[in-house]
Image (tube, rainbow over all chains, first blue to last red; front, side, top):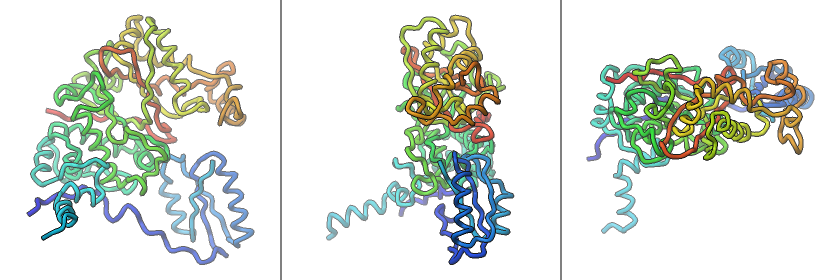
Length: 94
Length: 360
């Protein structure tokens, strides 16, 4: 009989998590844009905000930013997105 | 009678090494099966630590790094029990918020934790500080760094093609250890510069990229040799536009290079100051285009000027003398040194973290 091996994994569940349920429409929704801090992302996100509102009828766009691409978003940002936004776009540019 | 194919499949299914591959818990090399006996022996390497003690949590999945989980991964890496206090101190550094391990473990940049090890523990466990110091061939150098990588994968949940997104990766991701050659260094050990005593043992984790070799055979003065080293560091670390470099840098001087510099009465502090003062480029050279490459826009160059990075129209490579860490390692023959550029530093990213290694 094979000898028992102990489990090296220290986190619960799978590293790869399922995607959240997709929105069927953006109309009237509140969408967060999270700028992760690469160059020119503000210019890119300005254009995305315009398109979301003009083309897809998004009611409100909430803008957030990470401290830098290397640092995780602060807890208050995650809380704000969870509490009042229907979706979030984590946005990269360069 | 079983076919050859069936026999092979059965053998593989019964082989614990193959089972561990199937579970996705290796770094690509075979790992030592973490049987209960082996894990118990590893735990005995740090008898003052309780198996249930939580060292911390580690991103991106924020798994719990308990002493026992770390011991399991140290067994798999091939560590001896006497290496375990070094691994535990390394995991303490990994879990320290200042290192920014979450970002480091998933970034597109191909950084990895480099570990600088100082103090008596080096000789006690046989870490190689001499020829091939950053290379292969020595069990503690190979397995301590490997244990940290397995902890990042199996406790942090950071695996390539899943949450680890390094565009290129680098060989240092398997194990990246620098044991300082304190015996051949003309200066005080690196950890003493970081406020430890000489008879303490300590590990410093540094979010570093790939090592870049620098050769200089001819220089016989501190100034001439550091001009060569600075020339290489000025061009090679990150890219042309990284004036100033927003990461820290480890400069690993070979004993011969260190002794040449020290013979002129220069300290590690003098080395840092010289490189800070002399490695710079004209602002004109850093404008984007066919001459300046990616460069920096005029608004960013103006911001540098306001922050004091620009002196007489020149931008410094290093944002502060303290962003250069001087370590001595390698063999006693050979006029080769190595620079290891860091990932983004300070508030933007990672700060090197030093922890005491508790050994008998």
